[in-house]
Length: 517
Image (cartoon, rainbow, N blue to C red; front, side):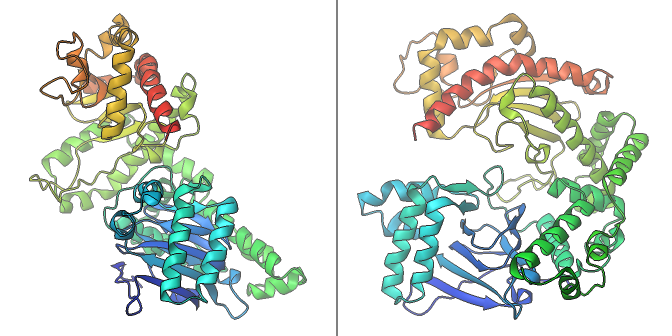
């Protein structure tokens, strides 16, 4: 049952620099979750369902055009009811080496702007509007061209993508490739199972067994990864299946459609009661609260245990405990978001799951091979944890609990702009960070610093200690007991409210810079 999730070796025609495929396949023949170094453009000619790019899952419709960057795990899972009468789906796929953007066309100055924008893409991109229409026509025309003509057409397509604003990022933030994770694998298996069995009664235990989880852990896992309960997802999928049938077979009556779904009663098949719903999710949350009445103290206790047992065997033995606590942490972060948005509307509507950092450490280039982080943290900012804007940072760790804010490790070009604008408005900036109530919570700027004042600024500037910073952030360290107090949430919000002028100052600079690109 468990399909291999793999690195795909792209096979091109001999003497061809790209792969072009106008395919017509049964959904069961679809490529499982995979990745490859080539950039991919996919046009869904016929069919709909759910796609997965990186760790983001969303429905897709017929006619959509998507760009998948290099080495991003991805797959399209088609609803059989949305395909051709013979059960086949149709799509056009173009794959090419990313070197084309950086070296192949770098000789042409006319290409520089588009190549720069395309090379910076680190997440899936959905093309929209007039641009999508033009690209679909080009992709269909490529089917009639020879190899060299296809290459020229690809350049035309890339120029359109690289210069348009008719695009929507897939996901809420940029994702850096980290390999196909276990959670990605689990979600693909669940989605595949639903697609194959949605016409039948699917119980919570059925779905949990697919990925070898307990029902409680499964509920927490699915809600964490998708933002919805399993019941809501199934019902949404079934509604979409009916909608697809109505669109594809407008002249058929309800009974005919029901028979096509292999049920005597269409409504019965679509809306039968499953084992979990919002009330059950609430019950699970209440159970967690009863089990751990002082949630933050329990989170810190778990992290302390993890620090002393930082290995995969111990973690897997305590996986259910971790899943419960992470679910509770997500709820805390969501409440923080809602309360912060009262005075900072920039983060209104933010999903807490997009603010959290993974527990797994990236050990590829580290001498420390401990597999897990010993803290739980969230970066609350417009765009989530990978935002380039000023953030409210919430961090629980034994003996190092932190409330922090500002911009961490900005990209060189943004750091350069920040330094310049801070220097040009130094009196305002200093008045913010030296304000007594602010300084009491956040005593000084933190982070790495240059040894010397950077070029372009007076070497004897009295503000050299500010200009030498490589990032602009402040940190307030709190004792572990702070987060066990009954009013810790209110106190935390007060601390974050003090950060607003600081973040707003930085964000105005970032927003102006991004708006001028």
